[in-house]
Image (cartoon, rainbow, N blue to C red; front, side, top):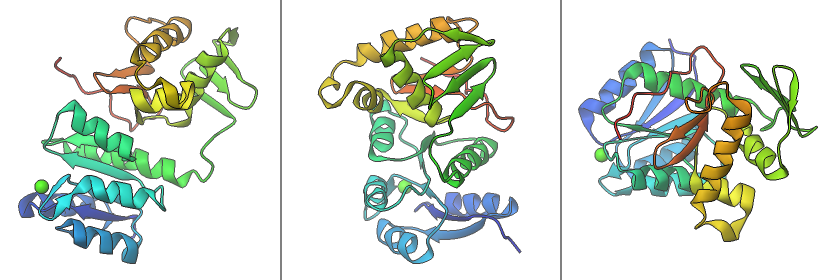
Length: 241
Ligand code: CA
């Protein structure tokens, strides 16, 4: 008898849906299923799941509509699982408010690890922690101070805002657009190079080897992710350009 978090699996492909449900149940998750966008919208409001695994291509509409609908009223974790590996699809889902994105085919272990990360973040009722540490880096969000190996790192206000944004969403992919909007404001959306330049500065000041960053990771073509300092976060998958 499973007692774990309730997960809604939205997938119209029967073998894959069965596979996902079986894998989740084997790890003590409680599972409800939906095959269509319509069923998913009903399930999410009537069963109040703690997380959603969401296929994008559904027979009666786009999974993205579910993300947009849910984000009107909930921060419930949504992990998109899709055969569409194009950057534009990933960016669209993340910008709409999905927490993470996995491209089919994916390893079950990675799916479960990402789900644990998403649930853990959701469980932290307060979105910010005053002090966050990863490796030798320590960020005091309230005090606006970052240290590395105990030494204060001199950051410009913009660099600190960018670092704080990443620190508040550990493990989560932030798109260039989200970062521009949060750090530089609504009129900056075409200035993707700002993000690249400032991330370069943060790496230079915080990483042991800025050319091979351990914490401030690039999601090629999409944005950036702060690696979570946690045993069950998978290392970044090898990527082909
Ligand atoms: Ca599908």
